[in-house]
Image 1 (cartoon, helix red, strand yellow):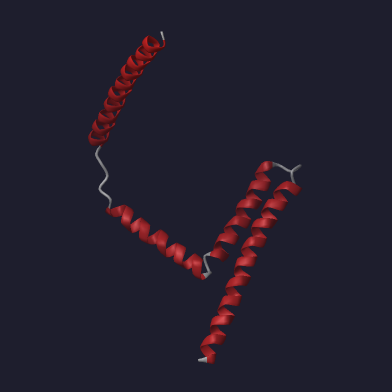
Image 2 (cartoon, helix red, strand yellow; image 1 turned 60 degrees about the horizontal axis):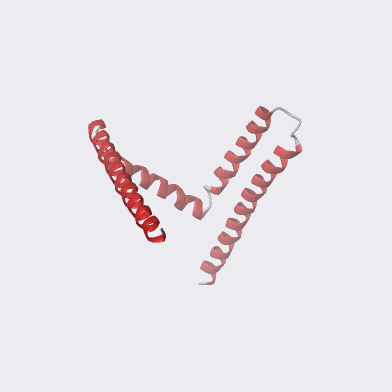
Length: 124
């Protein structure tokens, strides 16, 4: 039992070190981008992207990173199962929504016009 606790505490310490590395890399990217402001934005962008990729690679090695990657894979599988509407169905649905919006706008305009006239008549 104590061996399991020791493995778990060592694992959580390693996780914390990985997350500290990720935070440090992001901080270095932000600091470096502002410190080297006189250099070309292209070079700074390449540096920031490189640090971000290394930080992402480290983050994906953590338990939360592995869970996130599994969620990403599962969501891609679910996206393949979606039945997307055809162009004609999307166009028809869009036109129905637009017509409904125009009708409701006209009804609200007429209602507002009538209430405005009623209020003007009451106030005199």
